[in-house]
Amino acid sequence: MRVSRIGAVKTYESMRKIYRHLERGTGRIVAATVTQRGSTWTISFTVDVQRAVVPTRAPEKVVGVDLGLATLYTGATPTGEHVLDVANPRHFVRSEKRLAHAQRVASRRQGPRQGVAPSKRWQRANARVRKVHANVAHSRGNLIHETTTMLAKRYDVIVVEDLNVAGMMKNRPLAKHISDAAWGEFVRQLEYTTTWYGSTLVKADRFYASSRTCSQCGTVKATLSLDERVFHCEACGLAIDRDVNAAINLARQGLAGTSSVTGRGGEVRPGRQNIAGRAHPDESSTETQPDVGA
Image (cartoon, rainbow, N blue to C red; front, side, top):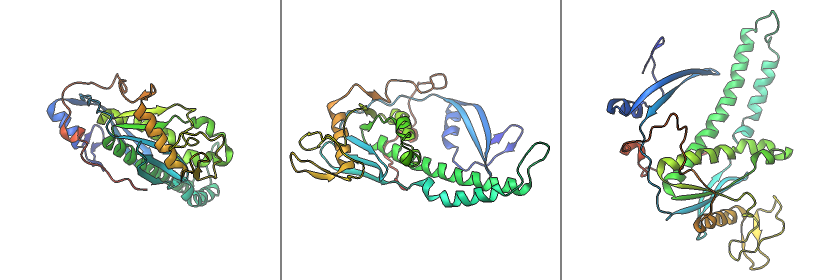
């Protein structure tokens, strides 16, 4: 890739999709932005492409996804089959000691102040702090991308909870862990990923008691504390993992149908998206299913 005023740039990620659009005349590069984040440089391209809208698939495969902290994503089908179990890697918590050490070192260096330039050692110390933050963000984003792509390719209808993340962040003991889980980013990526692969995203009603409802008899418990990891139904005697129970209830909500459908019918950045033509087989294929890892 050759960028004006910079010259030839070797990219880490493959540029073959952009080249295909340029060769076929179905896309053009509008702008390129070079950004420095810590000690790394990134270049992002704004591309105007002709993308075909993939037809919405028939709702044959339905999955409900429960978002949690102990287990990050738990998926189940309406029949009760447990199909997804992604452990919470706790990216930020695992990096806290390394981040604290880097911040302590940076605090002892001569930083910028009026009339005094920051020292080279201060700049290097703060670069190490930024690198820790960048590693956490990249690891978190990679897991979300892998999971959302797998779900959008494998299932026709995906049902998630409409969580009030901003309100939940007011719980001070759990705020750090909720922020680290990035539930809002997970749902945001599902909204546009489902449009690419023809699946449908359904958001269950915010006040639907998926965790407190028995998936076998439908009895709703009055209370269910966070430390109760196993759901026990007093009516029918069912004992099941609370996250799996919630995922089953969410999947049945999507099977029954709901008006809270997102991810289909709307344009994503309509000013930058040109819908026309047929999609390239390598860009719209749903056969390859990536592995989801921590």
